[in-house]
Amino acid sequence: MSPKILRQGALIFWFHSYDALHENRASVHVGKGTQDDFNDAKIWLEPIIEIARSGHSLRKHELNRALRVINENQGFSGAMV
Image (cartoon, rainbow, N blue to C red):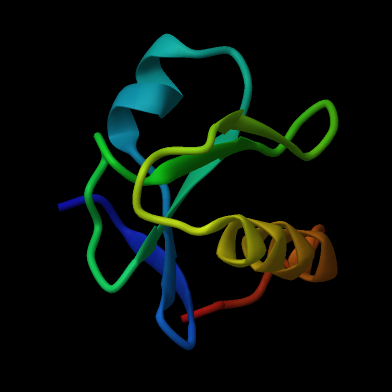
């Protein structure tokens, strides 16, 4: 299981080790209720925060909420869970 970094209500945010090894940009996955890498959203964290893949599990307002949470926590270095 990939490490969960934050839970905000039903939204779960986590990093995926495959991304760290095979991509040159940092990203975070976001899902609702579970960590499902294939159906959940993926959001680039650099050079700007943007949606890499919207996935299938989040509605538009949930994806927008996830982007707000990421923006609010950008640069936060403490534990987020």
